[in-house]
Amino acid sequence: MSFRKVVRQSKFRHVFGQPVKNDQCYEDIRVSRVTWDSTFCAVNPKFLAVIVEASGGGAFLVLPLTKTGRIDKAYPTVCGHTGPVLDIDWCPHNDEVIASGSEDCTVMVWQIPENGLASPLTEPVVVLEGHTKRVGIVTWHPTARNVLLSAGCDNVVLIWNVGTAEELYRLDSLHPDLIYNVSWNRNGSLFCSACKDKSVRIIDPRRGVLVAEREKAHEGARPMRAIFLADGKVFTTGFSRMSERQLALWDPENLEEPMALQELDSSNGALLPFYDPDTSVVYVCGKGDSSIRYFEITDEPPYIHFLNTFTSKEPQRGMGSMPKRGLEVSKCEIARFYKLHERKCEPIVMTVPRKSDLFQDDLYPDTAGPEAALEAEEWVNGRDADPILISLREAYVPSKQRDLKVSRRNVLSDSRPAVAPGSTRLGASTPAASTHSTAPSSSLARAGEAGKLEEVMQELRALRALVKEQGERIGRLEEQLGRMENGDA
Image (cartoon, rainbow, N blue to C red):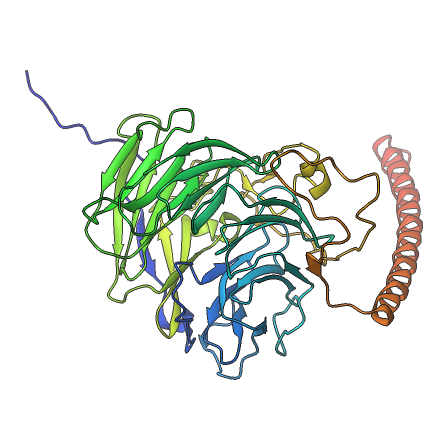
């Protein structure tokens, strides 16, 4: 009886990473040197954003993806913060809106012009003020429009409605120490957090309650990370008591023991996990490392399966990950990372080799699109929804982006959703959020909106007339075709 070693079947076993050519890199970028374990980079199908060194305040660079090569020192930046920028995040429902958190204790939301910056951007659409210490984490809700989470070194998590510039929930008693990271689940009903007290917590923000907690998820004192996977499980990275880097997979229903625990090496850089819910592949990048390891998460033991390692010569200062809808489907690209060096940003393409040029259904299931599944008010009222999916089969053409508008409304009106115990909402008397607007500019804006409305109405009337005319023409052509088929003409 012979025993053969069976190799686990996986379509991702042969994924390989390839850095792009030098002329497709972004050169001469002075990447921020601030001591904070953020990715320093955010990317979407239109723009690349990188936190950069700035004298007398904080700034980040926003480049159209096509603007490769050497970046001029005088290239305009987004520079409204008075302290260094610590974290940035693109809105998943609008490719021209980005949020930033800073050492100046504020969160700012910016509208980037459609073709990129022509001059420095100093005026945000909205400033969100509620933290008493620096803001190190900003992350958008995955399915509800204009809902933004921020976490600061005051150990407070705030959830904002950016559209009305108001604070929705304040969670100030759930974290006794510094929050390392926060990750929403698939439909945004819960989030998980990793904290300096070595605990991983799962929190329901609308009820303001702790759903589950695992103390000492990783025993080491160095920073941890926790992310939600699509099936509701939690993936963590951290350090053992002997300072060895670890990966673990947890079932929120039973956090007593990890489903899987793997030790990697004894380097000291924090491990940043990037998760692709469509392929169930987790890419792990260590700050200061020169490699990206990737693992497939499955339902059968040992659950975390090592796939491969991409290795390069230069260490990474930070990393950004392209959403699935921004990848080149025809090249079987399943991930693209933007690796920050000291003075440049280098895209790295992850590809599954395939001989066929046809669309690969198994590599590209329907993925989260840019359309929000809920409005902020619906989410606050208790509704949940999974992301609205789009197919990547056709060359996907995004819809026209809507400008982010901040409306000031009476926050004491009866239509306000009820607040659950354990979470707080700000009333009109609390200066939680301020927008950069004055009375004359708001009246001008109203006049502009009225003009736009009239334009839209005119266009609508013209379209109706055109549709009627075309309908009549179609009727005439069908009649003519019928006569020809009957041999009358």
